[in-house]
Length: 177
Image 1 (cartoon, rainbow, N blue to C red):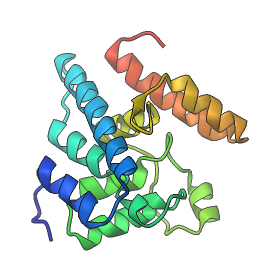
Image 2: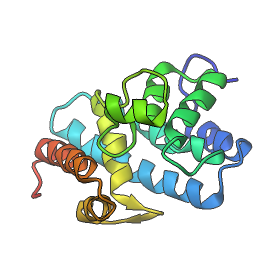
Image 3: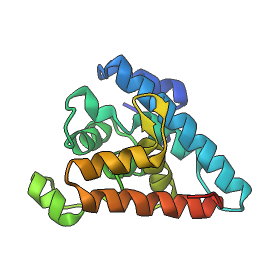
Image 4: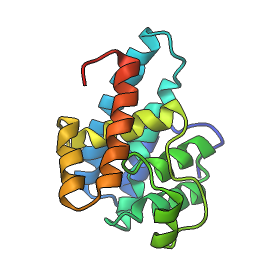
């Protein structure tokens, strides 16, 4: 059980191993955390207030649910695992809300998930979701890779949410789209 504070980086990695996350998932989480932390620090330099520790730990733990499921349900399962571990609510929300540009209420209902918010709302949640969409396994890829994958799967609305999330973070970074 973790105290009410955030676990350290080492403790977060330990939790992934204790829950038996596959090594490929842990590599992915490390790559997402690296990009998320870089993004958070760039945003801080632009004058935005970002909890960089929350971003890093949230990114490390965002896929903890993949210890039990490799379906879209891993977000809800991960949030349940995080609650059972006594992790702070901001971490639970990052885990629950990291999928794509978010899961709508109608999509969550169709999945049979508990009624809740599954769309990233805080800047920290958005940064982790953004970084997750930019990492394929453990490699950085252009956002177009994820958008095109979603479109090819017939998920045009999800692709559009990812594009909007990317545009939002990119505009904050003042980078080219």
